[in-house]
Image 1 (tube, rainbow, N blue to C red):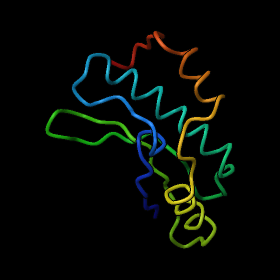
Image 2 (cartoon, one colour; image 1 turned 135 degrees about the horizontal axis):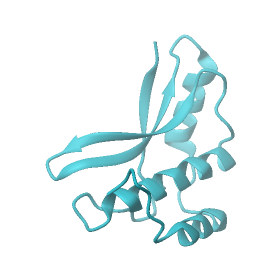
Image 3 (cartoon, one colour; image 1 turned 90 degrees about the vertical axis):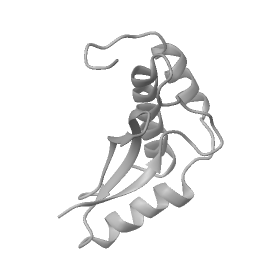
Image 4 (cartoon, one colour; image 1 turned 120 degrees about the horizontal axis):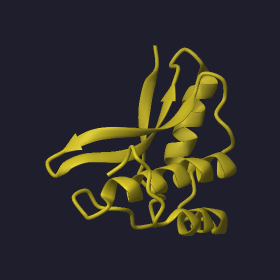
Length: 113
């Protein structure tokens, strides 16, 4: 059975899309995917039994997206990885993430918005 740990919608020192704002879902999805890519660059790829994923949850203002690390509580390496992502991940976007966010700005996908 897998459990999950909330990581966030973006690095802690960065602003992110706000629930209820115009274009929220598309922007939030881009930011979360860029954050997953950044975490993999900084913390490393997920070990067997762990997975970084975009998660949707309900809020008073609507559905919001964030990054979560799903892990297997029976596998120590997955627990360690999840807590490294949560507590020792990047504080800001790196240049590659900024490029990714700029390059994808304005893209539209049928499954968002």
